[in-house]
Length: 364
Image 1: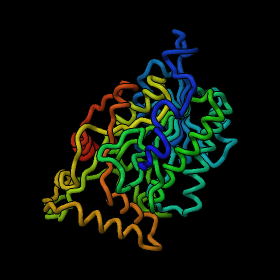
Image 2: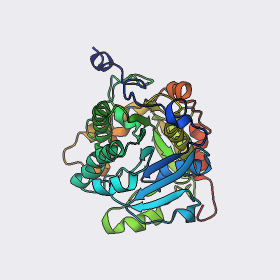
Image 3: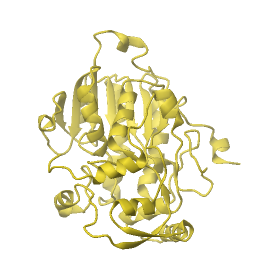
Image 4: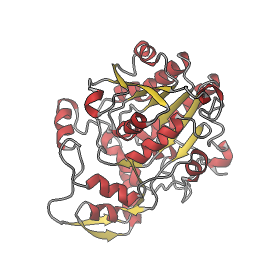
C-alpha cells in the first residue's frame, strides 16, 4: 500500500480551519491593515518577502525579529521595527509579537555547522515556540517556510509530487528529517488552536541575489568570513571541464517565494500546504553550464546510487548529509499554489539561476 493511502492526503484543506483573511472576517474592513511579525527577515526568504510587504497597501507594520542587529531603514524597509531576539526565548517572542495579525517564521539553521543540540533547539523547539507565541497573542495566520525536503528522497516517491503525497522524514539528512517532523508537530498544534490558520510553503532550492542570505557557510569563528566570501554565487573565471551526472532538479527565485509568502499572509487561499517552484526542470549539467563550466554529461543513475550509499555511512558529518538530496530527483507539482493562492512565478528555474549569477553593483 502506498504511503498516500496509508496516511491520507495532507494538502491545503486539512492543515488549518482558521480564518482565511482578506475574503472574510475583520480583514475585509476598508481601513483594516495588517501587522506582520517575521522571524529571520534578513535571510534569503526574507529578502524576497520584505520588499513586497514594504509596497503592499494592506500591510501597516512589520516587526522583524533576528538575533543579529540590523537597521531596516538601511534596506529601505521603513515599515519594519527591529526586535532583537531568539526563537528559543518564548518571552521575547511574546513581547515581539503583541499586536501581530500574522506571524511568518523564516528562521532556520540549514548548513549543519552548529551542534545537533543547538540545531534542534532552534529548528524544532524554536519553531514550536514561535507558533505557540503566535497563538497566544491572538494572531490569525501563521506562515511557515517548509521545504521540498519534507517529502524525503524515497524510491516510491512519484515522478511528480503534489501536496497529497505524505511528508516523511529523510533517511539521514537532518534538514529533511526536521522539516517533516515539524510539519507533523505544527499540524497537531494547529488542531489545538483552530483560530490560527496554518500555511506551509514547500519550495525547492531557492536562488536569487541573496541566495546565501544570512547562512553561516563556515563554522564557528569563521562564519563572518564565510558570509563575506560566499555572499553571492559567482560564475567561474575560466571555463573548466566538469563531469556532471544528469540529475534533475527544480529551482525557484527568492522573489517568487516572497510572493507566495505574501499571498499566504493576506489569506489569498485556504490554509494548508503549497508546493512552489519555478517553471521548468533543469539538470545538474544545465546548472554547471550557467556557472561557466563545460559539463561532460553522465547518466544520473550511477551517481544517485553512489550518493545513496554514501549517505548511509556511519559518522557522516551533518554538512555531508546533504549528499542524500541527490540520491533521487524530487520534482513537485505546483498547480495547487496557482489555482488556490493565485500564485504565478515570475522567473522560470533557468531564469532564476541566471538572475542569481548576474553581475550587480556591490551592495545590491
